[in-house]
Image 1 (spheres, one colour):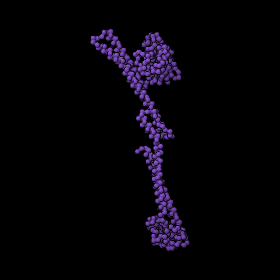
Image 2: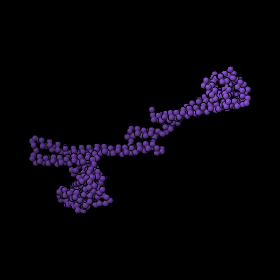
Image 3: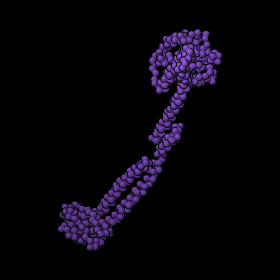
Image 4: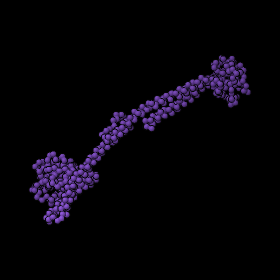
Length: 459
């Protein structure tokens, strides 16, 4: 059963129960009021009849024409219960009086009762014939309730038919209103189904109604779609990056492995190759093995970065770290001048090992492309809550069309990434800097060298 049908049935059931309750109350109230009015009328006629000077217990028919309405039936009874007289409109019918009513009237109290007859019900009002003197008889005044019962029957039919009509009308109106109220939910369902079928997270629920529960649901659903769209886009990008990484890694690993496999074949030749050739083959295998180790280590760093492993955040003094990096770079860069004099004695919030690895990658690139006799300078500056570390080389520079791709994995250009490198150094540096809420950038001028800048927050 749909929500729309359940809501409509609920509305209709509540309305039907309310109408039934109101109809019962109205019917009972009208019945009691009209019966009370008839009883008061009969009591008034009895009082006028008894209070008249011509009142005679044994001759009531003449007095009744004067003091009672034509539709009123009057009968007098002696204290022993026998009929003394009655009006002619009763014919042969005798108004009954129960034993309880007789005792009440004998005790001076009026008595009213409704009795059924062949022609409908009668209301019989009985009262003592005297109020202040000893009771000599009983006067009974009666009137037919046929008109009253007919009116109540008509009222009952009207209430029953009206309740049915109103309930059916309310069901129809409730069905329409429930449909209108649930239409945004229907659109949400259709949107969700379309998104599931088409994988289109850019769709949104079009809702222009008031900011009620349905409006908040539509807003929440659209916000969820925005988050899903961003997550789906990130997942797609991560999947593409993973596929690209696997493809590029397979390509990079194939070359050294093929070289090692070929050299192993040379070593197994019979007769054996010359000693000089064997030494050259072994040296080549050692170089290719070192290359494989570096490549695997770089891939592990990138894999950890892609897995989102957090880096440590601590206060790291910049000056001793840069001095340590410069010392190591001077051992590797023989024939090149490395200057690290303009270094501020400040601290940043970062991971010390990660920052050291970034600086070693940038210095390795600078040493690789700076010719013998060239100079490499390291300088720092602080501004706006950040510290910038700049590494400047005097190499040939980088082509302008290669600058936007420098931080892509396995990217190498003719002028900036040649030789035995796998093209992962700057990609690793960017991943490590981004993980520390920093920024890395490279500027270059043809024939003048390049400047690599790492910016990290002080707080």
